[in-house]
Structures are given as C-alpha cells and as structure tokens.
Amino acid sequence: MKSTSMIGKLISHREWLLGALIIMMLVGVGSAAPFFVGAANLAEVFDDTAILIMLACAQMLVILTRCIDLSVASNLAFTGMCVALFNVAFPETSAFVTLVMSIGIGLILGAFNGLLVWLVGIPSIVVTLGTMSVYRGFVFLLSDGEWVNAHEMTPQFLALPRATFLDLTVLSWIAIALTLVMFIFTRFTKTGLSIFAVGGNPKAAVYSGLDVGKHQFITFCISGAVAGMCGYLWVSRYAVAYVEVALAFELQVVAACVIGGISIAGGIGSIWGAVLGAIFLGLIKNALPVIGISPFWQLAISGLVIVLAVIINSRSEKRGGRRILREAHQ
Image 1 (tube, one colour):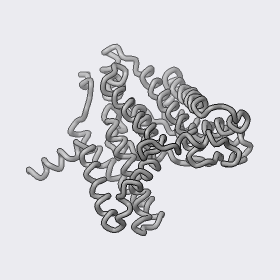
Image 2 (cartoon, rainbow, N blue to C red; image 1 turned 60 degrees about the vertical axis):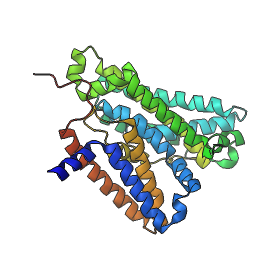
Image 3 (cartoon, rainbow, N blue to C red; image 1 turned 120 degrees about the horizontal axis):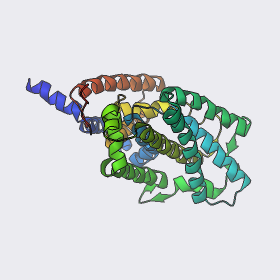
Image 4 (cartoon, rainbow, N blue to C red; image 1 turned 135 degrees about the horizontal axis):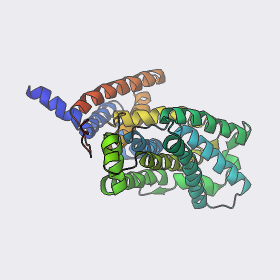
C-alpha cells in the first residue's frame, strides 16, 4: 500500500517526476558521452529548446481554458516571413522594432482565433485547424513560394537571438524571462487565477461572475503574441524563411504541455510543468543522436512518452489537482 501511495504522490507532483527523469536521462547520456553534460553543450541544448519552451508556456494557458491552439506553428511561419520580407524591404529597421512588430502581427492572428471562439462560439479545435491552413497558405501567397535567405537579411536582424550574455544566448534569456512573467501572471494576478477557474469548472466560473469566453480570448491573444515573437526569433536564428518553417511544430508544443501534466480537460497545470515537458522533449531530440539512436526511433520514443503522459494524466486527474472553483451541484 505504501509503494502505491508513493507512486501516487509522484504522479500527482508531475514537476518532481519530470525533474527526476531529466536528471536520470542526463546521467545516462553523460555516462556514454561525457561532453553532452558539459556546460557549453547544455547551454546549446537549452538554446535549441527555448522556442518550444515559450510556445508551450503560452499553449498551456489556452489548454487551461479547455481550448487548444493548433495554429501556433503557422502563425510563427507567417510572422517570420512577414518580418523577413520587411527586413529585406527596410533594412535600416532596428531589431527591437522588428521584434515588437512580430509580436503585434502574432497578436492579431491570435485575437482572430479568440474572437471566433468567444463571439461566434466555434470550438477552438475547429477554428485553429482552419486558421492553421489559412495562415500557412498566407505564407505561400506572401512569398510566392520563394525563400528569404541569410544573405538577404541584415546583420542586425540576424544578431539578436545569437548575441550572448553570461554564456547564454539572448534567445535563452528571452525564454527565461517569459517563463518568469508567465509564472507571475498565473500565480499572482486575478486574470491568471481566473484562467484556472474557467477551465476547471466553467459553470461555477459563470456563477462567480467570470466571463469564460473573454478569458479564452485573452489566452488566444497571448498564444498568438508569443507565436509571433517566436516567428522572428526562429527566422533570425536559423537565418532562413520559407513556407515549411516549423511545419507540424504545434504537435511538439501540445506534447510538451501534456508531458508536463497540463490537463486537456482544463483547469490543471503549471508553468513549470510546461517548461519541464519542453526540456524533456528537447533532451530526447538532442540526446538520442548522441548515443547513436536513429531519428526514426526518436519519433517512436517521443510518441510513446506522450501516450504514457496521457495515461499518467488521466490517473492523476482522478486524484484531483489545482482547482480554483469546486464542482457546482446540479
């Protein structure tokens, strides 16, 4: 009975379980390839995972309200193409202005999703499946199927995410800063706490005076803005913009949330869970090739981890999680 109780506690504290798995993975890979656990290499792995971390944090807010945003990768690709073409046309524009512009474009795309969910009442999975194709199609129309390559971009456009401070890239620092902002937002602000409430129990939330649709709209706006910002960071980091940028990346984003213990049923989850879920996937992606495992096995292992995470989630949700409002009596 005690062992069952211990397993139950581990499952209900997903962050600790994930943290332990990450440490075990590092020890295992490090024993086979010591350079992998070196500070410089770990900094590179974190840099490689930074965009996934940011998108997972934003997606978590959407999922908490019982919605899902499948258009984030298309939003990222469209915004990245917009700012890349803008940089070609107006090369004197500063990187900071470009960053702000990308956030604005992403915010508009996210708000469009949110308005369709809030005011028109269309299920979020239907809305974002549609806009996923629409935004991706816009990338093709905007670029006419052409690539924007590194030699067409200005040095200042490419430099921002690659610049380093304290041995970490600016891209990594942006991911850390966004994580902290998201933590404060979900933990200490009225709107952040309300997002848990409307997802945990929409009926009780309405009885408490909360506008469920409005909070869903807010989360789509945040998700869109973060995806837009990642669009610029992705294009400048990899120094190329094309139609297939981040193709199917939304699946990794949702997977990071599920692995991190974010309940698809809404109302349960934490920023640290989303971050650890993204880091876990990032480590799998970077560690498996190091120990000689085929990329095809990477997909299979990632899929297996996701299935296990869903099973664990379903068990942990039976034990209850962080709910702001209790179930309303019928």
